[in-house]
Length: 282
Image (tube, rainbow, N blue to C red; front, side, top):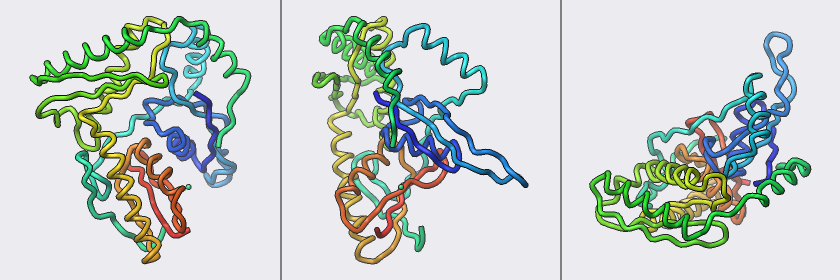
């Protein structure tokens, strides 16, 4: 995954902008602080914060690279924060049903490091790939066992395409595996990825996507319709629409949808864990 580089008035703001570009939560990204704002007279800050970020690699790094990372952390390197779900105010619920957006009357690049990326790609190419069927077997067995621990009869249906293994869980009363805003499902996905990583034992493995009876696609479609309706409101009434707190993955879906719509622009505002998307007239 290529690095993206962003700037902001603070380190946190620059990180949030990077997460929006990557479309992942902070727990799935790693950061490098390139520049920090300087404290001037009377505590005022000068300059900008500049960070680089990328999606965390799916397989272990070479030991030498891990040692370099640890040394930087010992000197006070930044550690990613997890983004916690908050109460719903306007975006679609977990079952895909949007609610009314909140309204207010006022108030969104990266360069990769070619040398480092070349070295990482060379290391990746030297690793043995894990057989796709073995990956599927590991994931389906783990997820069906996880369902049993919840007292559920779960059937895991897996497909593989373009370096991605997608597992859709089927059965009755699986809402407990979804959670508000898919928070539980996202956690299960991360646990399943870690289980696959352990079984890979240094081999290269695919990106993991876990779904429950197609709810991710339904939520994506519902969010797209919700954004289109909100954008129409912004154009017709000239108001600013503030969405509920969203994960960085959902915020990216909103920003991507807005790029195809005229007369509306989007931005992410607020501080973690209460960061929101705001639509306003362009």
